[in-house]
Amino acid sequence: MKPAGSHSSQPDPLHRVGRSPVRTHAGASVETPGSLPHPSGRVEVVAAVITGPDGRFLLGQRPAGKVYAGYWEFPGGKIEPGEAPLAALKRELHEELGIEVERAWPWLTRDYDYAHAAVRLHFFRVVRWSGEPRGRENQGFAWQFPGAISVDPLLPANGPILRALRLPPVYAISHAAEFGEREFLLHLERALAGGLKLLQVREKQMPADQLLRFTGQVVELAHARGARVLVNGDAALALRAGADGVHLTSAQLMQAQRRPEAGLVGASCHDAGELARAWELGADFAVLGPVLPTPSHPGAAGIGWDRLAALLENCALPVYALGGLRADDLDAAQQRGAHGISMLRGAWDGAASR
Image 1 (cartoon, helix red, strand yellow):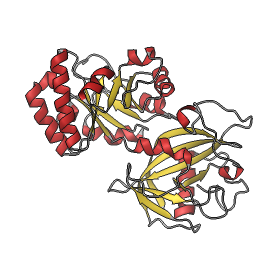
Image 2 (tube, helix red, strand yellow; image 1 turned 30 degrees about the vertical axis):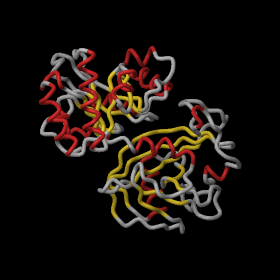
Image 3 (cartoon, helix red, strand yellow; image 1 turned 90 degrees about the vertical axis):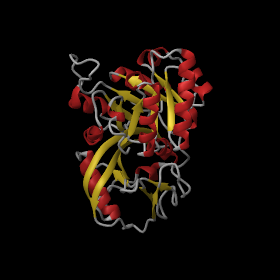
Image 4 (spheres, one colour; image 1 turned 45 degrees about the horizontal axis):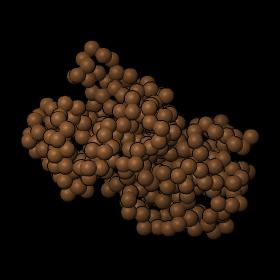
């Protein structure tokens, strides 16, 4: 992440750092949203997750002569006064890597507090560009797979972003109540073969003993394909069944005093207050909706795409859009800042690739 262009007199934000990042909750270098411990406010920065068709993303290495020289980070740089974040992203990537951004979506906004600077990072996912990336400032770069990072050391601020990148774009919800248990497991096998990597067991009407057995079967099938399973509303059941985490209902989210000790934690949200609570609790991601009308509530309007975009503006947490969505809605959701989409019925239609 470099200074905002060779013509700028503004320093690289990290050049103002003389010591290691300030540690906050859970050992992370992340401050809670909205806190501005430095009177001058935060330095506004853009960062790019440049993603290739094979799922790899690009990391750059800070060149010699800069603080944290040799550390790896996402390409980007400082937003100039009066400059829109997307315009800054395009300018920075042209200057730094010699590429022209053709398609980029807003993603996460994270605050990081260093010893002598407070930085606000606006992350974009760059999915289409022209030109071949090359280090125009003599910096190294490397393509990396989420969950299989081969370069070191990484800037401490990148840890939460790398964890978020391990979340797939589709989060499926079980639907055995509709299909029947045996038929659903067949649908699940097809979806897993097609690339599904994350799903939630949510069977509200299933008796407890049957649900434990069913969840165990889902976990076994999912783990064989490298997929992760969360259990709706029951951390104890998740642990007993060998699942990977728990998904909190919105009521559980608002009542919880601490993050469940159950691995991965998701949370259902319907408004800005619940999203803020999910962040405070330390959830790994949230699900937000309903976006569109759903078959189970045909007379109820969803929040719509515009409201989804407004709620996700400057959101620090990866969020899946939910409600009346199909696989071909993924692009629309991500354009509005969602990490991906969560689906009930749509997840099992044709068991398409995820």
